[in-house]
Image (cartoon, rainbow, N blue to C red; front, side, top):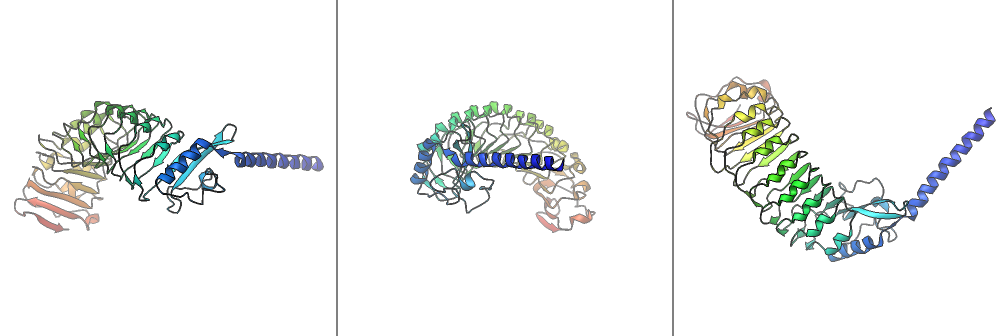
Length: 378
C-alpha cells in the first residue's frame, strides 16, 4: 500500500512539474505583436526615450517586469514602463496593455503611432510638456480603464470620441490648456468612478448627460470657467464621495439636492457669482470630513444647522459669506474638528469658550461684531 502511494505521489509530482514546464515554455515562446513593437519604438524614439533595461530584455519588450507582478506605478526606477498580457493565441502573443511615461520632460505632440497599441487599458502621460490636441483616436482604445494626461499643456477641445471609452474608470486631464465646453459624450462613460478636470481651461455649462454617471465617486472640477448653475442632478449621483467646484463662474444658489449625497466626505464649493444660498442642505451630509463653502453668497443663520450631526468634520470653512447669528456651541463640541474658518461674515455675540478637550489645537479665524477678524488659538 505504501509502495502504491509512493508511485501515485511520484506520478503527481511529475504531472505538476510538466504543467509548470509547459506554462514556462509557453510564456517564453510568447512574443510581442510586431505592430506594437514598431509602434512602441517609434513612440519612444519620437520622445527621445530609451526603454528601461528591466523590461526590454533581449530586444523583447514584453519580458521582465512587463509580464511579472512588479508594480511599475510606484517605482521611479522603471520609467518609462509597459505592462503586457501574454494570454493571446494560446499564450503565444503578447499585447501591450499599459504605457507609463511619467514626468520625463517629454516635449512634443502625442505620436500617431500610439493608436497602434490597440490593447491599452492604462495610459499614463502625466507631467510632461505634451502639446497640441488630445487626438481623436483616443476613442479607439475600447479596453481603456485608466487615462491620465494631467499636467501637460495640451490644447484644443476635448475630443468627443473620448465618449467611446465605455470601460473607463478614471479620467485625469487636470492642468491643461483645453478650450470649449465638456463634450456631451462624456455622459457615455457610465462606469466612470473618478474624474479630475481641475484647471483644464473648460468653460460653459456642465452637460446634462453627466446625470448618467451614477458610478462617479470623485469629481474635481475647480478652477475652470464653468457657467450656469450647479446642476440639480449632482444630488442624484448616489456614490459621490468627493466634489470640488471652487474657482468657477457658477451662479447660485447651491442646489438643495446636494443634501441627498449622504456618502459625501469632502465638499468644496467656492466663488458663486450671484444668488442667495442656504446652509440647510448640509445637515444631512453626516459623512463629511471637509466642508468648504467659501464666498458662496450664503445668506443664512448659523444656528439653523445642527452641527452635532456632522461629527466627522475636521475642517469647516464658511468664510466670505453673509452668514448671521451666533457661533453655536455645537461647532466647538465637534471632537475631530481641527480648522474652523468663519471670517468675513455678519456674525454677532460672543464666542463660546466651552469646548471639547480634543480641540486644544483648534485654529479659528472668526469675524464677529465685537472682535473684527480676531485670530484665536483655543
